[in-house]
Amino acid sequence: MALDDAAKDIVERTAAEEWAQARFYSVSGTGDELVTMTGDRVALADELRDSNTVVLVSTTGENAEAAATIGAACTVRGIMTAGLVVTSDGVANEALFSLRPHARILLVPAEEDDLFELLKATRA
Image (cartoon, rainbow, N blue to C red; front, side, top):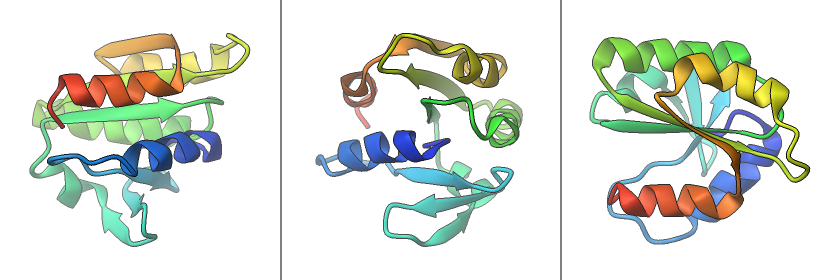
């Protein structure tokens, strides 16, 4: 799930690969609604129903409220969460602060390829 525009670009490029079960989204508003890569809007609760892992991708720290909403929804459902803080200059403070409370696994600083490798490792 992409939390900002630059993260959405990363998620879109990763989504272009062939995946077995992975689904890719950007967040909308407070995180209760997600946007698919084709632009369809879907409810977070519906998409979490069959999920066992959620990966949050951030580059800027935007949408901290959405990260909190998604993180809380995953926690009550027992869904494993991972966070990737992808920055080009190694400065990740805002993104780190917005993801840290909501990700059991946190990669900082992460590179774009780390999303691909993480999904591959989880057989997504």
